Length: 310
Image (cartoon, rainbow, N blue to C red; front, side, top):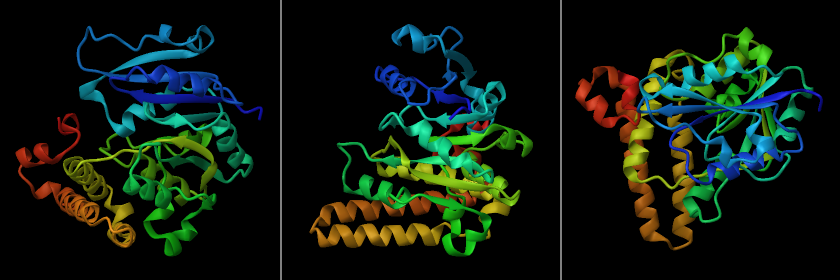
């Protein structure tokens, strides 16, 4: 446990509960050396996150770095965070991911006892007030069993071979830098693209079920649409990775599982709404995969990240 860890968190309009999230991060059994907050700002005079909201001990290891909204990019912004990190490992998190207990960092670090592991990522648990669909999504993508994945698992796991989430993911910094780090221009999927790069270089990705964070969302149909559009865009732009492994089969299997579950529970209205969400997701994804054939105005109407297209 002597290895040092820095934490990088992109933030945007962080709420009042963000300081308590940071306190839980500071109280980990393995404490981070430094926490870098990459704050997206819209105006020159916009106030940065006030570290005085945190305890003095925590504030001493926090630094806030402004990022113009026009410059924000899922890959490039996190790449900047990795550039200023100085520890052996860098942990990327999102502002709405809350540590379940004090062993998240410790358990993610354990995976690196295997020198072939380049990335380890945490299990995501649904919020207490989450509905059945949120819970099933988390249970499907983040099961209770840990696994170490390599490119040899492609035939068995399909697209899930490269699944990884920067909601809470730790990277061996020397390997990350050696492989060139995150792609500098991506609307989505910077974590999966990096996982692919690491596996192609002979490294593995560890899913650590014992490292747990609370993180889930209840998306509307519109939110499902725009997220799926951007997902399709990223897969089209990095087709050399995603063309050979279809994510549609994986999505269809999950949808069928949820529909069968809801039907057995007699929740017919919920089933219809979920089927509507699936429709919005599929249409958004298909449009995103063909974004280069669409009028610019339509692209801007469909995307979740308008700044990306500027």
